[in-house]
Image (cartoon, rainbow, N blue to C red; front, side, top):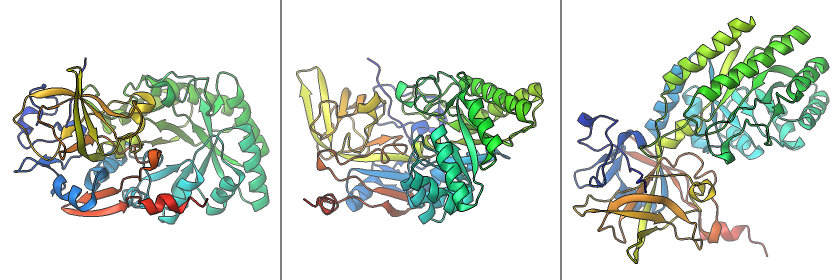
Length: 461
């Protein structure tokens, strides 16, 4: 059975380097590649983030709680902006969005990708310039499209013939010409889970390249002239480490650009290759740095444009998970520890599938560490589970924890910034946790904890 390594920055780890891997005996050591950059063990053995102890965080804000290292997130924004200089970096809001995050990414020079009316409302209420917003979605309503056009959203990524018809009618009614990208399904099988692969033919997104609907849709928009077709868009999936999928996607979508040019004499000025860049959830994961991604993607686009005699389009990408995922960990309190007939030790925490559905939904793997202390006890192979009335309520399937793990211990799970809060629910009527941002020793709640009053407020029966 493979043990997933916990990780974060231990005070004595620097000389060992980021490639050093923990053994089961090193249950107190935390590895830097999995955690926010400011995380360290304090003198008393507790983890601290941005100079603030997890004990203090638990006392002040309760558990479970999502803890965001704001400086870490800002640094990751800057890394992508620097690596993709001359390109537009759109933060994929679906990973995690709130008004504070909108302001962070705006201040760091990123654009923002939204995919529902609710995400658009959050972006606009936080003051994101609408011209820096892109609007995705396979089934945008007339109301959502109208709001986007009226607000002056910079680009709408059209996903179906019905949407082209809806948006064309709205544009005519409002007397405006919104900018659009055409989402293309390029037939790339990304090396990721079936539920988060989005460019193979049998799925709901985009226009098929192989089936000819992508070219048909592009020519229809160009000929009609009501919408401003600025470019093509391709997104092959999420949590991807192998850049070969991006290379194949770029070749195919640029081939379509050339077909449009040859058919109508129009060279589209933009190209969006999406996001989906993977992060490290365990030491088995080895994500590429933004600079490496940029070099590979820039080269294949340049080479293909030269071969097709196309002018270089303005490139855009859409990292979400890669920016916010590693910047957050979830802090839990252990409630019960149960040894089941020597088969397995179950460590139950005060959250679970309502604050992180990914493990139950598609077998996502995570790491964990006892965060409130160090322990001299030998390791045991444990399963971290939640408090919900489901046997599938698993947070971390397999992890080495100290044998003396006990009720009252604080447990931290890294890499929970992406999709955990976004996909959180009130299953079993459990209120959703807060998001607490830490920066240079200061803390602030950017999404408050839900209360029982919040749960009952919608119950009007």
